[in-house]
Image (cartoon, rainbow, N blue to C red; front, side):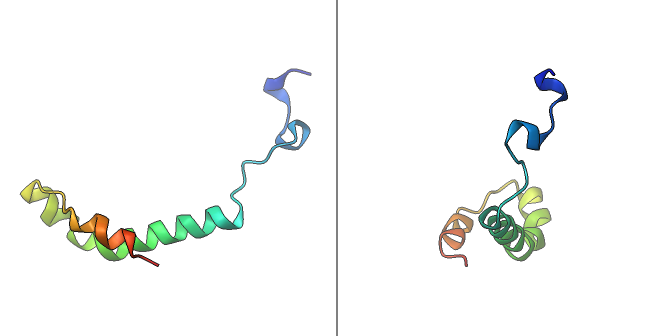
Length: 61
């Protein structure tokens, strides 16, 4: 059997997200929806990237 035809379980690995990874994905998605999405067109049109976004991310939870 070649590596190309082996399943995840046969290889002993999994590409499923664990609970910590799921939590990070949700946190990033929430931040994007609340802090980036509402302003993205304005920032795109003005060709700016708001540095204060990094400060908000640092304190996000």
